[in-house]
Amino acid sequence: MSEPARLQELLQEAAALLRQGGVVAFPTETVYGLGADARMTSAVEAVFAAKGRPSDNPLIVHIAKDEQLDELVQQVVPTARKLMDAFWPGPLTIVLPVREGVLSPRVTAGLDTVGIRMPDHPIALALIEESGCPVAAPSANRSGRPSPTLASHVLEDLADSIDGIVDGGATGVGVESTVVQVQEDGGITVLRPGGVTLEQLSLAAGAAVQLDPALLPEAGGVSDQAPRAPGMKYTHYAPKGELRIVTGESQAEVSVWISRSLREAAARGERTGVLAFDEHIGSYEADCVLSLGSLSDLSTAAHRLYALLRRMDEERIGYILSEACPENGLGAAIMNRLRKAAGQTVIRLG
Ligand code: TXA
Ligand code: MG
Image 1 (cartoon, protein in one colour):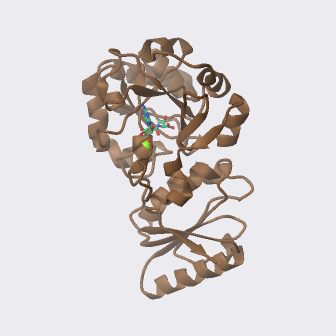
Image 2 (cartoon, helix red, strand yellow; image 1 turned 120 degrees about the vertical axis):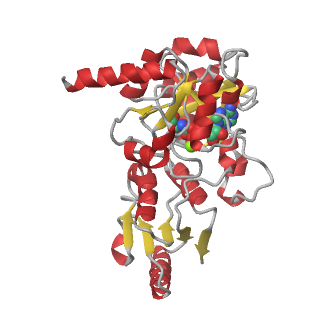
Image 3 (cartoon, protein in one colour; image 1 turned 180 degrees about the vertical axis):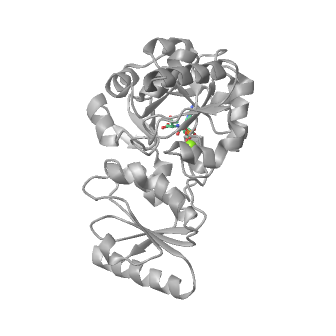
């Protein structure tokens, strides 16, 4: 059978599984998702169970066509419409007032809103369309683990607890979608930074864009204010080893500090690892030296980040240091995930 015919057959099988209440992993442009029919409580519960996900953390609903939106939400304000026109299909999730009685209440975890996104991946779009379901899909990792950017990551975490997987190779963006909510005054609040940057949002919508204050680096995870995307309050993406981020005004100082700390850890008998940008990676010695790509193009760091964190586990690294990057553009999402992976431990020099 030809490749396209084989893929077509796989997609039909996967879509049938979804219609029957199964849970199926599939690639999107950001990370792999674990999909279920968002209208079917038993299927949605199977997703929570497979992931070991806390039930107060709502799921994103994925659609393939604009026409699916009306059934799911009460209204779309003009700014939200502008964002859809600019970024769908793409890595943007928009939180909207949910229409009652269609989705399983488990999807929204009791909120009166639902996060909707149209993914920009041919397999995801074909699967959603073929199934005829609105597809609830969190990232297809065990809760707390780095999100999966390869089918093998999904199998590592969930092989025994899912009904199927469509392997589409490596995902592109590598970090999850940006989650936004349009406020009553027309401003946009970013509840989770992701594949669409704050700068892009502001340009497309012509509106003020602010990061949920609970996510600001200064809040450092110790803010009294709970993040408005419930998922942002959980430790996440963490490798098994102890990860710390090192920053400072002077890169020379950062490099010297990292090199010395790696040497000291090695002398204590620890297996050491470092995540570094190509501009400085040559100065480090460790059991596992992994590149985040160049600082001049952060899409590489985003694309690789989760696979690198998993790699540290495979190499049984106990002591891990990471460089930081500026928090504009994709850097906001990268640093948000790195800080969560590090349990908010940032060492600031100088
Ligand atoms: O890129 C992505 O968004 C991936 C792919 C598979 O589409 N999905 C994903 O889903 O990252 P998940 O469940 O891992 O993360 C969803 C995030 C969580 O932080 C959750 O709290 C937030 O979105 N969220 C979902 N619905 C929400 C709502 N109604 N209000 C506020 N936050 C919401
Ligand atoms: Mg997730």
